[in-house]
Length: 303
Image (tube, rainbow, N blue to C red):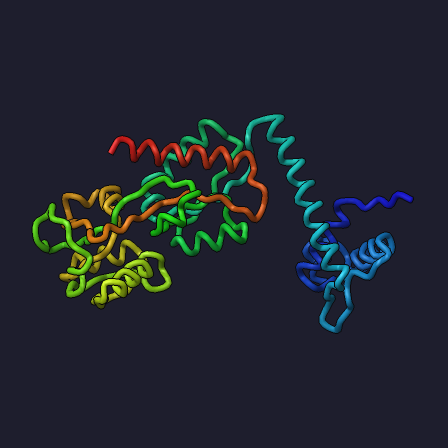
C-alpha cells in the first residue's frame, strides 16, 4: 500500500518538534491548534508510530520521533533545494545571501561587492554583518550566514582552506620604537605595553603560546577586541597593538603609525573565506562568494 505524506505535513511536524508545543507551532504556522493536532495524528497513523510524548508543558519526541525528525528534515531541505535550483536555473541567481565580514574588510569591500552584485545579479539581496572571527565561525556552523571571512594563525589549519590573504604580524604604535624599517624579535616584546584582544581570540592565543614557548611574559595593559578601540588607545598613550602588516596597509596607516614586523619567529595571519555546511549553498551564494574572492584577490594583487 502506498502512503502519501505531503511536504506541508512534514513542515508542520518539524515546527512542532522545534517548539515542543502544539499551540505555539499552530500560532507560528497561522493554523488552529485542533488542525495541527489532527495533522499530527494522521501522520502518526500513516507511519504507524507515536512521534511525541504528550506532557503537561507540551510534547517531546519519542525515540522513533527523533529518527522521523532527522529524515523529515532531509526531505524538506531536499525539496527546498530542488525548488531553489530549478528557479535559479530558469533565470538568474536570486534570493538573500548572508555574509559576515571582518571590520576592515567591511569598510574596504562592502560597497564594491554591493555594486558588483547589483550589476551582475539584480535578483540577489545581500545581508552583511560584521564581527570577530570566532563569532563568524558560530554563525557559519548554525547557518545564520552563508559566507564569512575568518582569521587563522596556523598554517596547518589553513592547508585545505580558501586563503585570501596572508601577512605577518607586526607591532603597531604612535611612538617610535627603534628604526621605522627595523624588525623586532618576539622576545623584545616582553617589556612593551601591549593592547591585545581578550581571550580566547585567536591572535591572543597565538601570542601567549609563543610567549610561553620563549619563557617570557607579555605586558598586556589593556584588552580591546575592536580595531577602533585599539587605535584610539595607541594614539593617546605610549602603548602598542599587534596587527597584521596587511591590515595596517589596508587601513592606510603606513604613513601615520610606526610599524615593525615581528620576527624570530614571524607569525603569519591568514584571512580565510569559508561557507556554511549547515545547509546546501545556493547558486546565489556561490556566485557572491566568487565575486568577493575576486575583489579581495584583485585588491591584494595591486598592492
